[in-house]
Amino acid sequence: MAFKGGDLLSEKAAGDGHGESSSYFDGWKAYDMNPFDLRHNRGGVIQMGLAENQLTLDLVEEWSKNHPEASIGTAEGVSQFKRIANFQDYHGLPEFREAMAQFMGQVRGRKATFDSDRVVMSGGATGAQETLAFCLANPGEAFLVPTPYYPAFDRDCCWRSGIKLLPIECHSFNDFRLTEEALVSAYDAARRQGIRVKGILITNPSNPLGTITDRGTLAMLATFATEHRIHLVCDEIYAGSVFAKPEYVSIAEVIERDVPGCNRDLIHIVYSLSKDFGLPGFRVGIIYSYNDAVVACARRMSSFGLVSSQTQYFLARMLSDEEFIGHFLKESTRRLAARHERFTSGLREVGIGCLRGNAGLFTWMDLRGMLREKTPEAELELWRVIIHKVKLNVSPGTSFHCREPGWFRVCHANMDDETMEVALDRIRGFVRQHQRRAKAERWAAKGQLRLSLPRHGAAAAASPYLALSSPMSLLSPQSPMVHAAS
Image (tube, rainbow, N blue to C red; front, side, top):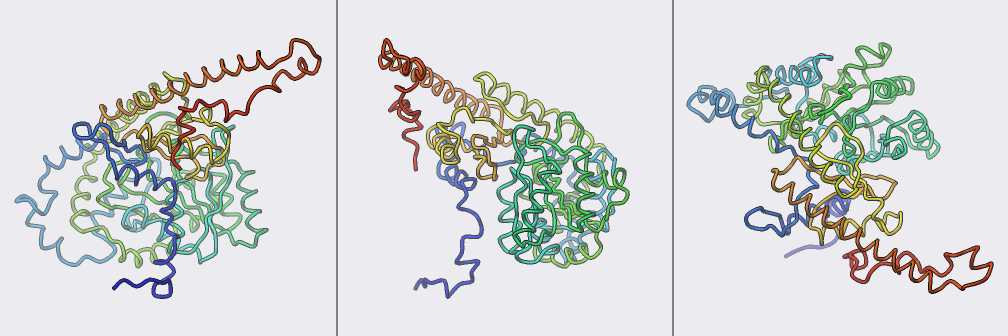
């Protein structure tokens, strides 16, 4: 017998705090109901809402074939089976933590060093963010986050911890760069509302922008955190996915070289192997904190989301192979750059621009010119057309808390070349159709204007647009904007 009623369940179970009602997750559901397949379902929805790197999996597969000793399930590695299969404490395998610290330094061009004793494991970056939220803030306290930001932060940081995320508004006129003025404004606004600000959370490189935070801005953030005694959490899970200049700068490098007076107890880094290595299924997240108390607490909490010892064992050997890692990072950079250029050049063919990016697995696409009006509602109407008619799961800017309607995140590294070309063809076909309709509507409006204007009269001459219909009425009855699914 099924029981109903919130009094039988916890508030977490009965509530909607997980955030799955977001359009970001709705797009995934549309894909799950009708997934595209090159051979079996070419009319399905193409997944462009998942930031996953499938461009270099062949390199990992090849290394795995050449190193059977890295797996305890092979004849070459089975001698380690008993050691690895038995109980491991939540500190993790020493060789794994050492390999991860070395790898983090290699990814960042060896411009910063990492201590393996500060490496704390977690079940992916999701678990790492939540663990830090529990360590750094109490329910009702807040972190400031530059917009636009990753939609699942609302789940990762807030759902179970009870903390708040407050936006630092950034804008397209300066390519959404974070400024000190915007930071101060957000901080002061929170204080006026009686909300205690415990820290700042940034992604560097940015998701969804695909841009990096420059050295000066990082120094400003570290200084601000020190002066106001608040934490700075830098999510650097795309640090190894920078494919063009300017070069990537980690907060670890900045506090070592540029802000000698920084209070390092306030600095924390989140990392994972889900993006740079394309291994989200391995669930390898890392907390790297300069605060001893945070390391100790996070390590105790990691018992709720440990990485399996077998996974640690395999990765320790792969990440310790510096020659392979050097080749991998170089080849990944080349492939990401090629994919980004092919995709953005394909968009330029029909006049669609993107924010100039140099990192990540996605593009911040500008469709503001296709909105019937500059409102979040119009953006969601356009998004529904793209999902249900064009059959592409792209993510609307509103789901990233972007205040400027018309921006969309489009992931392009999670598919093969042929699928990407199908996706590009769909986008270009949709845009060209829109352009033809817009042109026809302009001609119709001009014809209506000529018929409506009197031949004489000062009032008509002074205001020749009085006879025009509203923008919505000019849309063709066949326009997908009219028939957008609700």
